[in-house]
Length: 224
Image 1 (cartoon, rainbow, N blue to C red):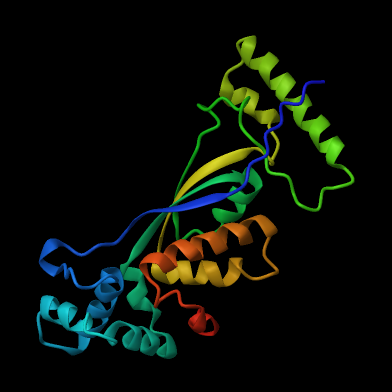
Image 2: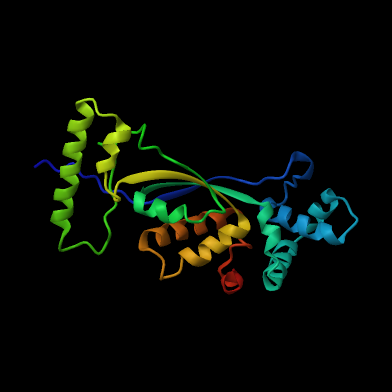
């Protein structure tokens, strides 16, 4: 039997995140998304304009100081005002089912009704070692049947019913900062499914690139 199996690994990319409008943009601040969250929080106790509060928040040492304060107070509402959109690909359908349990996020998933699955890769659980050949045999078998069904005129949306949970998929996920902290708290834990744990750690690394203070590991014990 021909081995059609292609093994894939998860990849995560940050596609978009909340940015201030031009009037608030401060070119000297490399962490303007965090300054935006801080400015919104500080606006509740100030009569100054949002613009002035934002610029003041960008002062050296200001952002880390305020972020640490909000973490200590568990004032996580402020982080709901910033959003992150991720591309998550090379994951199994099993993993995507774990992802969408987080209902505070918004999802778009690659459709098996419209995408031909014959050349799609699969994710293999790392603990499948002794039964690896059986996994390959099973994967080749469903692809063979799927191909015959599609070639004979069966619609993709019907042929997909024989595809396994291991088949790869792509998900676009948008989530706000507060719920991303909650997601990471749960899904980077060792009790989480191995695949979504790997994805969560990649998401964490991507988020840290634009919000190094909010997603600093030193705050993990305060996350909810």
